[in-house]
Length: 154
Image 1 (cartoon, helix red, strand yellow):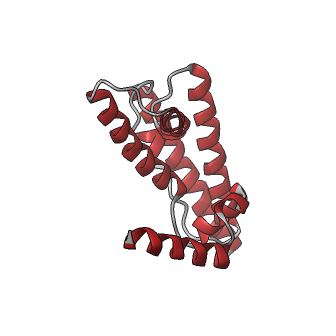
Image 2 (cartoon, helix red, strand yellow):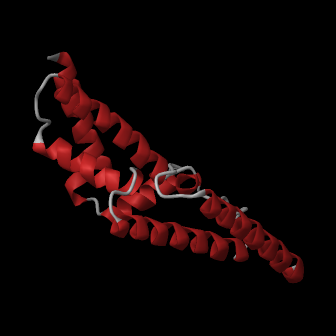
């Protein structure tokens, strides 16, 4: 009972300082995570892994997981799990390319060194050795071009 009242007090304090979670928009949440130095992709992956363990526990007992839990796992799977359809695969590729381009633009604007995402690189479901070679070649070319741009701008 003591923990419940303590949690309620903490919830009230948090709501007073930051507003209730229902009032927080997705953009504000993303901004807050970025300001706190939290990698959203890693957060999604960790949450997905934890929720998968919860679902597995239900299924091992022969029970269906609650609908909200199953929906949350499905939504996170689309972001971090293996793509199940060609459409998901293409959407993930588009997202990866967009993030790469954002990194390149940020680098050209004087931001810290670009870091390539390992998320796509280590997925093997639909990635052939030729795909891996192409990705590595393109990464080297982009890094070379960025270095040349930086030298020319200095």
